[in-house]
Amino acid sequence: MVIDMMRRGNKTDAVQLPTEAELEILNILWALGPSTVRAVHEASSKDTGYTTVLKQMQVMAEKGLLERSEQFRSHVYSPRVAKGQTQQRLARNLVQRAFDGSAANLVLGALSSQKVSAAELREIRQMLDEFEKGAR
Image (cartoon, rainbow, N blue to C red; front, side, top):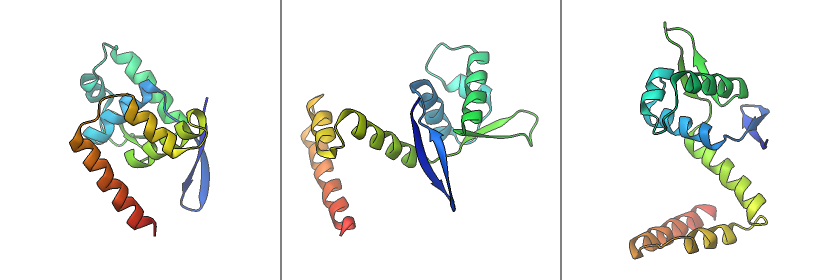
C-alpha cells in the first residue's frame, strides 16, 4: 500500500495512490464527469460485474479517491483529485521507486521501451523547451 501526501487548502492529507483497477475507474470519471456506478460499469472495458464496480467505487470513496453525492436517487461519484495531479503523484512515486529519483532515467526508460516517431520526439522537445522557460 503506497501512501502519498497531498495538500488540500491548509491541511495535508495522506492519500493512497490508486491501483490499476482504480485508475481505470478514475479515467472513466475524468472522461465522463460525475457519474453513477451504472454509467461507469457501462463505460468499463473490462468484463466486470456491476456489483464489483459498485464495491470498488465504495472502497475508493472510503480511501478518499472519490466523492459520493447522495442528492440524487442514484449516488453520483466524482474524483476527489484532478487527473493531472494524480498523474504527477504517480510519476513522482514511479521515479522514486523504479528510477532512483532520476527523472532523466524515467524519460530514457520510457523512450527506449517503444518506438517513438519523429513527430512525438518534436513534441517532447517542444514540451521540454516550454517547461524550461516556465521553470526560470
